[in-house]
Image 1: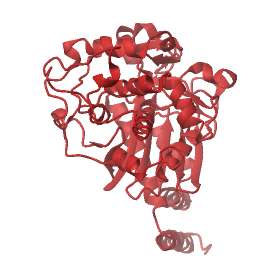
Image 2: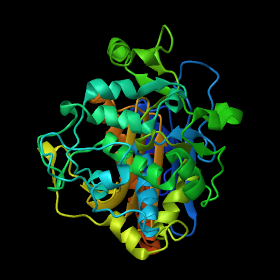
Image 3: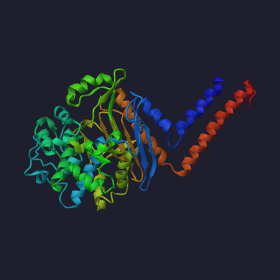
Image 4: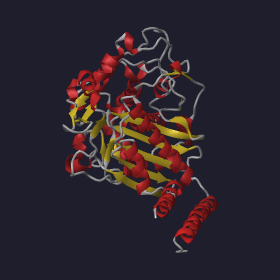
Length: 441
């Protein structure tokens, strides 16, 4: 009898592993293994959504009352996927002849401020440098931690003042000149590009995104935005921030005491981070559901025809110039905010993101006829073995989804046939065992 149940289990395990599209159970298993409470997943082509699932919950298993994940309505911080909206807004300015990507940014910042690389004062910085992370801006963690503010506290700050102060420190710059194709990922550089849009459009960047991008895509203000107050009528849809590793409590309390990070309860290993924002908000704190984001990604697959008027604009966004990453910290190749990345030997373009308690990915294949969105409340900011497991799980899920939905009908039939014959073989073994030992087959 043991062998009977064992072989039945083999059939079940095999079905989960080879099934395309993946089942809720198979994905839930991967999420549980990585301590990811939930995920919203969408796969789409240029015309329709091919796969859409909300799996798991808004919060970890620390209480009996848990909100189920919903790809249509669960609202995530997109993290650095937000930067892709900066690229679109910038190219809209280019199409209006208000911005030249290769002009000195001070042409657009004057007389409000003047930005100069302190180690290379004679070298100009352009908007293209900002969008391709080649401006020579570095990371000043002491100042970065000050950006984090509880609730909608960022609305009480001025984006220009925040950026100007950060860049006033020599420690915020790299010892490399701008424009020499040496990349170093910069949230502040991205936000400075957004501030230039703000200056040219004569409106705040968040208002610009609402009117010129989200509204055009029929995404309502109550369904997407940078402010928590945008979701005042649907607070239950907001995904909270939880971190699985209580040993990091003191570190969080030291680095960002203003966020009041605490243990989620007295029994589990989860930390709770109350809702917050950052003063350099354009680079990472746009909030929306996977479904709303899919409207943006689908527009990208269709060359942003409703957002941009010239095909050259989308070509500019995805073009990659020769580049070398500073200290070889990443293999990603940057276009304008969007970047190319190889996952499972497949060249993809899009963006990933992570903030405490949230990890996201939005990618399209090289032909740009298929896209994958995975928004999760897993955490990778700690950069430990657990964080690596979360990251690996999301990357593997992305690979499997592209593998699944890029298959032709014939390939799918072949896999189903393989599945049938494999399972048929296992069933034959069961019959043999039963025939030999129990005389039932």
